[in-house]
Each structure stands twice: as structure tokens, then as C-alpha cells.
Length: 334
Image 1 (tube, rainbow, N blue to C red):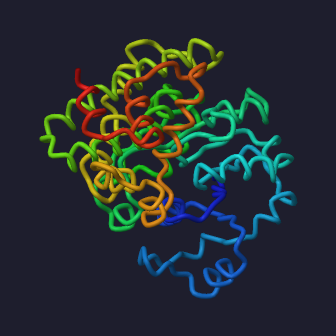
Image 2: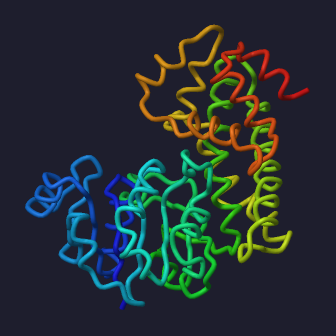
């Protein structure tokens, strides 16, 4: 029986932990905040998500990680924000270097290096470690409430996919397997940038057809960038047909449709404020961290990795060069 260790305690990570536990899996959650650890241990609840944690979930401080065994029955899952991903690995490098596999729920990339997370792992850990990402249109509260959800699971190892499918698939949650790990990663980055542009399209009175066209352009960009990265990476190559299949998967099309059309996305929320002469820094102070804002700059400044992209360039012109959004949006379709 596998033991699932989850590093990070955001809402999605806790929802996945809860889901794993009610499917009779053992789950350990590691976080830094001692007050939260004590609260979860004594109350066994997450009020916002209305979760009552079962007896097969345990909470520990991240400082304990170095003392842990890390055998083949342990499934390690990173569920931090993108900004915390690298620190989790570096701070616990001795533990993760002994890992058989590493799975992440995190969407995004490392903004300091411009690298995707599989590249970070290849640099810091043994490149032979099995890697896996779970990504798609999903909210923590929907998983808790057992709403129908389909997500993509991409891995370099079929057995790892099998472990997760057996542990997580239910009549309301479906994991759809692929080997296109890079395509799923790239999808999770670009969908945030596209959602900002989609929000701005709506704010500037462009009809929904333009958002649908933006999604199509974004799918093309996912394919082009993924092809570029896999061509320069050993061990991540997949067939052209599998790469194209990713474009219509939950990780790509599913997430694009969710973030580009639904106002629950912080990225789209930012876009909805982008009209005329707006103060972007002031908007961000009200909204909070907007991953697409950060990713726009990272991808634009790392053209040697991601090359030229009209989606990225359009977002950069609006967000960082402060060019009037309507002009940029009109040029995007010319």
C-alpha cells in the first residue's frame, strides 16, 4: 500500500489529500506553520472547504522531512505555489535525492531561472527520477463537493500513473493519462497568460468569439513551445499525435476554457480591469498574486527557451510596456 506525502497545504493540496484519504489511502501533509499544524491536529477540519479530515491523514512540520524514510512505497507530491516549488526541493534536497518519484500539483514555472519544473528537477535531482504532474480545470471546493472533474495526469512512468489512477479515480473524478509531461506543463503556464488577455477582451467589449479564437491561438502556442522544449530535452519525447491530443485535454483546452471565461480566475480578474490607462501595480495590490502576470515577464525574458510568441508578446506589451490594451488586442488578430 502506497503512502502519499504532500508538501504544502494550500486548498487544492488539502482537497487532494482529503480525496486520497477517503479512498482509504494513507496521507501525510507537511507544512511550515506550527499554528496550522496544531489546529489541524486538534480540530481535524478546514472550515472554508468544509473538510473533516479522517484518521488516515496526519500533519507534520517540514523540519521533520530529513528524518523520514523514502522507499519505493512513498509517493511524494508537491502542492505549493509556483514560487515555493524550488525552495521545497532545495530545503529538503537530501530527502528528495533519495526519491523514486516526484509528482506535483503546481501549475507554472520557476521565475528565477525561467525553467519548467521538470527541468528544475533534472538539474537538482537525478534525471532518472520518475516525474508526474496532475493538472486540469479544477477547484478545491468542487473536489470536496464531489462535482464531476476531469484532469490530466502526465508522467514519465506508466506505473506511477497506474498508482494515481487506482488511488484517485472515482465516479466524479477522472484522471486521463498521457506521457506528454511537457505539453501539460506548458498548458498550465500559458492558460494563465491567456486568461489575462481574455479578461481584457471582455472588458474592452470584444465579443466571446474573440475569446474562443484566443483559446485556439493559445493551443497552437502550447504545441509550438512544447515541440521546441522536447526537441532539446532527452527523455520527454512523445509522438506528434500525442502532443496534439494534449491540446484538447483537460490540462490544455479544459483549463483554457475555465480560466478564460470564468471570473473565479485571478488572471481573468486582472484582465477585466485592463482598459484604457490603468495602474497595474495598484490592481495587483487588490487582487493578490496573479501567476499569469509573473509568467508573462518570465517567458518574454527567456526567448532562448520559449522563442517568440504573439500571446506572450501581447500580454507583455499591455502589462509591462503599458500600451493601451485595445490596440494590442486588435493587433493580436491581424
